[in-house]
Structure formats: C-alpha cells, structure tokens
View 1 (tube, rainbow, N blue to C red):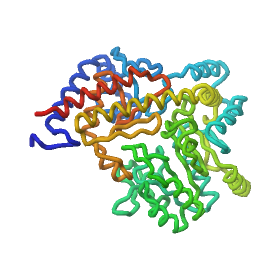
View 2: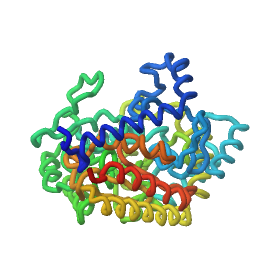
View 3: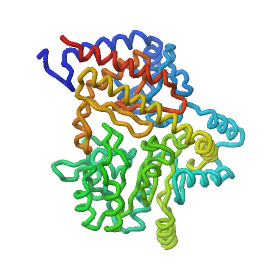
View 4: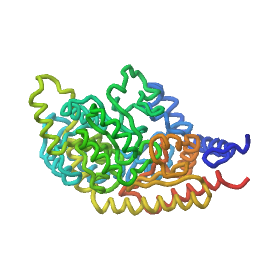
Length: 457
C-alpha cells in the first residue's frame, strides 16, 4: 500500500530514497568495488570479521587512512567520522601522544611476558582516573568480563550472573540470554551454542528493581553484570534511583556488582561510575582506554581483592582459566600511559561534551521541525537519534524501537553526504579532534535527509 508507514515515513518513499542512495554510493566507489571483487574471496563471507558484512551499504569502502575525526577511502572520499571504530577510536584516530608512544615502544620490543616501568605508571594512572581498584590487563573487554565473572563465581561459590535483557558485554557466552514472557531463555540465533545458558545466567529488564530482587533472592547469583546505560541497541538511560537500588540489592543478597564501562566511558572523565559516584565491586573498561591499541582493564575493589587472594591461595595447583599470553604487553602499557595522561583529560572531555550537546540539540531541532515521532539521547560524548518515541525504559522497548530499514537508508544517505555514523544503530561519538563544522555538517545532512523522507506528498 502506498501510504503504509514505518517510523512515521511512508514506506514507498523510504524504499525510493534507499534505492537512490544505494545507487549513488555504488557509483561513487568503483575502486573499492573492484578491489573487493578481486581480493575478498580469501575471507569467510568476503570480510575479515563477520560483522563487517552488517554495514548497510551495497559494498564496503576500503579505507586508505584516518586521522583525528576524518576517515578516507581508496576512492578518495573523506568522511567526518562519528562512528570512530564503534568507540575503539573515541579519542580520535591516532592521537599524537599514543602514536608517539607506539613508535617509541616499537623500537624496544612488542611483547615480553614481563612488566615495564610504564606498567607501574599505568596502574597509578588507572587508579587516578577510575578509582581505587586492583587492576588486571586484558586485550578485549570480552576477556575482561569473562575473567571478572570467573573471579565473582570463585569468591561467592555461586553459579549465575544476572544480566539485563538486550545487554552488551562483548561475546561472553553467559550474557547471551533473553527474556521471553518473563522467563530467561538462551538467545535465539547463536552459532554453535550447545549449552543451556540459563544454567549460568538469569535475565531481567533494565530499570526493574523488583525483578532484580526476585532473581537475587534465590541465592544463586554471583554477580550482576551491567552497563550503567544500555548502549548496544537504542540507548536506555537508568531511571532515578536505579543504580542506588542495584547497589543496595547486591549488598543485601551478597552479590557482586560489575560495571562494564566499555561504551559509557563517553560519560566523562572516569566514566559513568566516577561522574555519578557509583560503587561497583568490579570495574571493566575496554575499546578506547589505550587510545585504539587493543586493550581492556578490569579491577577489583581492595575488599574484593582480599577475597580473591584467599580463594586463589587455597585452590588446587593448575591453570586458573584466566589470562592470555599477549595481554599486558609493553605496547599496551605504553599506549595506556599516553592515553590516560595526555589524551583522557578534563579539557578534552569538556570539548567532547560541548560538541555532543551541540549535536544532540541540532538533531532534536531537525526532528521537531519535521514532526518525526523520534527522540534523541545523549550520554556524555555519545549521542543517538532513535526512530521511535521515547524515552525508552528497557531492552524490550529498545528492541521494538529499532527500525533497521530506516536506519540503513539514513546511514547510507549520510555517507553519501560525507558523514559516517555507527552501522548497527544510530550512534555518534564526539572525539577531542571533532570540529564544530563537522557537527554542523552532520546536522545539516540529517536535515536534508529528513526533508526528503518527510516531505508532503
């Protein structure tokens, strides 16, 4: 039907727009298309990492270089980059202090399996930035979360982790559970999953303290693993009192509280935990913490660390099941020190906050002007426009609000106009290198697209 609607847009108009934008994109990138046709066959599915196939364009661009908040493909198109490696480059591509640290350390070796003086300085800086934790280094936040859960289970003697419906914690198996009619189930679509994940995980809705208490009261939950803000789909903010309630419930039932700040490090200096004075037992952050060098960190409060020492000292000899050989290498420490000391600064966060507010304000004005039934959410330097009314309360509402057909068309339209946002949802990040003009171009491009999509018949 010609007047069928999706997210407030006539479906025939959306389809016509998406077709035009896809054709424009493909026509503008012949070198990338030719190179992919010739060379991508060596990779499974034609991509080096399977989720690269989830970008919505007709084919991928091949990137030639990136610097600051700009990225350029081999066809010569330069884009204002608001995706920033889906947070991996949130502090900009190749921040100068981090690039210098890489060059300096590269002449001294890449991995030793032994610490350096920079490792000691990194520990000091991690505590200064994020709080009084006893730190360990990993390569990805997935690993950090996996190790943190193993510690939580060891010191509590309990099997389960509580996670929130629609959560994101990397590829930790235990987190791939969902709620169906109020019952925890193994999430559909998992490849090669043979174990019943409900034996080791329980799922609740974000912002539902009553549901959390009912789950904890059973006495088998070792840890609550949560982001301070749900970020993997359409962003969901915590309601007033939710995090205080989580902390009190975890203490009441002897459950550890793990905060995964891998995305919410955008919130400000020290992440959402420091900005909002949260009190987790275990703190995790990855992706951009070392300025783009693959690195994650996890830390235990001194009290939890003492419980870990006791359990570890009394376990049988053998492998602990934690740690990877290339983690805690000297290159990671060199980059951690450079990023924590010289890039992750109050001044840079102030710049990021200012431009993120300019972006969110501009997007809201455009949405209001066109009468779109959408809303905008901001968490520090992280901004999203969501193609549904808001605010959203939990993961179920976020899943319902996700409009992949609309998002894909807008994403391609923005690329054609010189702005790159995250592919899986409408996430945009501001880096220390982002300029006011880039923000204003993105808002103008968004306005141009909505003018097309919402124009009168």
